[in-house]
Picture 1 (cartoon, one colour):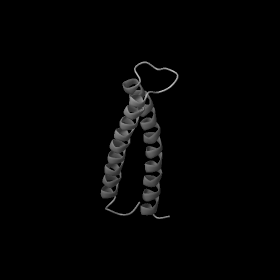
Picture 2: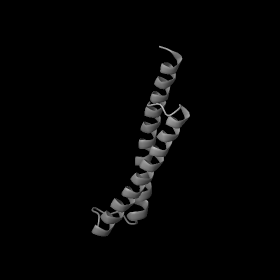
Picture 3: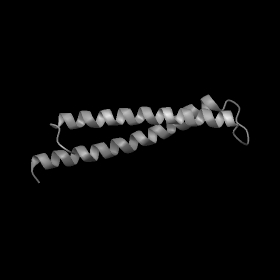
Picture 4: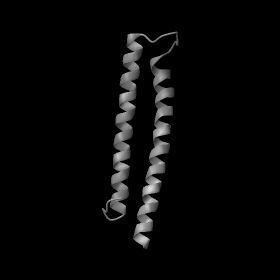
Length: 85
């Protein structure tokens, strides 16, 4: 392997690791923050307003995470000279 191939392999591995950690963090944040926000008094089941709130909250977190992740990947690609990773 030449140095460029090694560099690309390391970047790919770093991206995969980062994506995994970010996804886990996202799910933890969604669970904690959305539940705290949308279910002030937990019971045996969710009301329709709680379900709606949870759905909207999760969708917002996912959209934000997707945008940040896309921006991060583009930045990495720019830094390695716009080469496919």
